[in-house]
Length: 545
Image 1 (cartoon, rainbow, N blue to C red):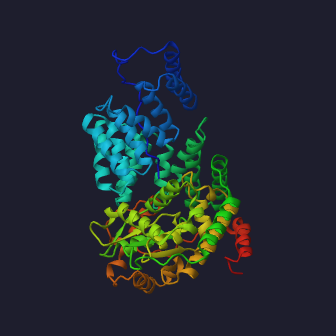
Image 2: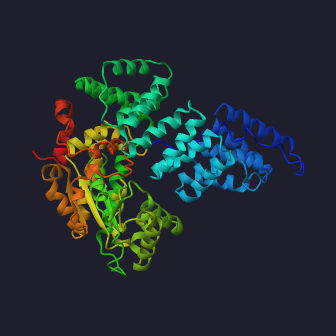
Image 3: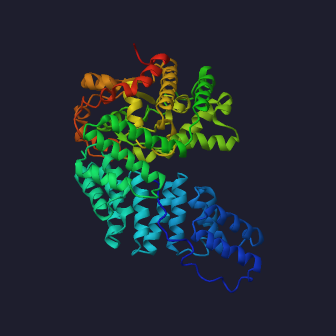
């Protein structure tokens, strides 16, 4: 999913002159501030941060320097510091829409969604003719699964500025999330008509997994890739799309090499510590091997259904099936569980696994109450909800200590198909394991190791859901799934593809609107290209034969 973009020209573009009631700046402070402006203009944000930090050491209350620093650290991903800066100067410029946008973006990235949306809405009130304000509001709403509202905001942005390609891209993604696939395709094609080499536009089309690229598309992609000085991220997005276009033409050998090259580029930018990850898995098993305090209320947390998997394994399909039930709301990939755990670690001043042994039953229940409070919006219409965050598989032990009556579903797919599917997908920078098939194999092995541990330790609360079994016997598996979740059978779960709802995972948004397909396996097309992967998986015991 794209990052929430800061679409401002610069936070300083409309700053008023220094308040004449304030003491004049010292010459040194003035020079540092002017240097920071030049560094900002050259997008040298690290240097600008140093200049502004030095200026504020001399003039700690200078609002212009504080505001500029907020803008700089926002662009560097230092959201907590950005929030501090913007909040400090908001009383000086309470009616400044750019300032509200910057604060809203930083708050959103820190998970403070209600306050973020409040500031972004206020920006739209202050500057109703600002396409930037409407775009940022729409993007925030879309990422928070308020998709219908997001579509309206993004359409408003495009009414104000039809050439706003970022808004057009976000609108196409939002349409896809709502299942309006034809509108999404038209939106991405419109972006490409306006900007034929637009990497996000091409990747958006590819990511729908329903568009077959023809020879003309292949030629356009080749031209786009031939351009000089392409940013690495753009070249990677175009590369993944070009590889899928080659698959559409039946050229799997070249497609594999293009996937390999695009992933190699990602590997240079995105680091992954496979050994450290394995140590984390071992430490997690150790931390939860011993029994935990008996819960104060064994029936607490029945509302929550956690779905865990490796990406591209069928978790969105399973969530959509459950969300077709009249008692279940599908919340998509929410981050509340991780944020509750991270917040407790910050409060204690030690890492998560270090405080687990000393946590009391009262601690776990307090954290469970916090989680349910954070997720209350997902129970406004229905009593149960799904939480499908793809890193929650580390946290199953904590989740069941917090929510002893919750249910956890482990969705797993054929190991070779899983690794290949992830290798073919350009994920965010947080998924460095997918850039290399050896790392991907290690990640999958770790996942299967830890989820086996959870299945053995909590057999009545953790359910094993093989994707291939669901394809082979859909009704039988769906009945077992509903029974495990203590839900009465409902035929709507068998016709999940007719369920209207927001699906945040773009690669799956179109697929779950179709009846079950049994032709999703791809590894046979790649033959001996995957022999080393198969051998790795056999040696680890996760692949038979």
